[in-house]
Amino acid sequence: MRSQPHLLIDVRPQNEFEICRLPSSVNVPPKEILDNKFIERFPNELADEKLPIIVLCRRGNDSQIAVQHMCNKFPSHTIRDIVGGLYAWHYRIDREFPIY
Image (cartoon, rainbow, N blue to C red; front, side):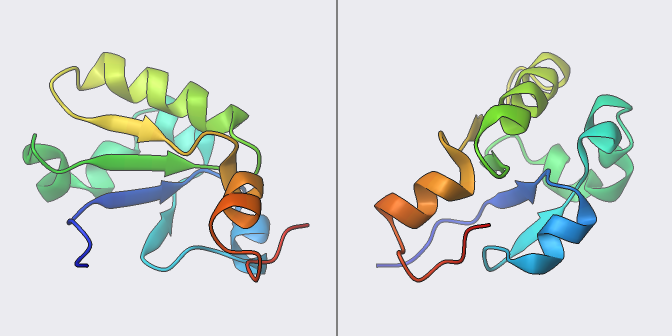
């Protein structure tokens, strides 16, 4: 099974991102999302309205805030979060993935 192209944004603080991360994820702290600075980092990705954007955090709370803000800014994009964050990833997808 091939993975569909997407943009995977991890909104945890940089020090937490360095502890563990999903492959191909990029770190964008919540402040950068709320200040719209993320737009400068991903001009090509945001120009493609068909490219799904997936947002995650440790437990799923910060990612919900980021998704809501991004959906308001880019209403025609598909933007979702991983419900339950990396904790849910660990318990539902990959028990080998470290949690802290």
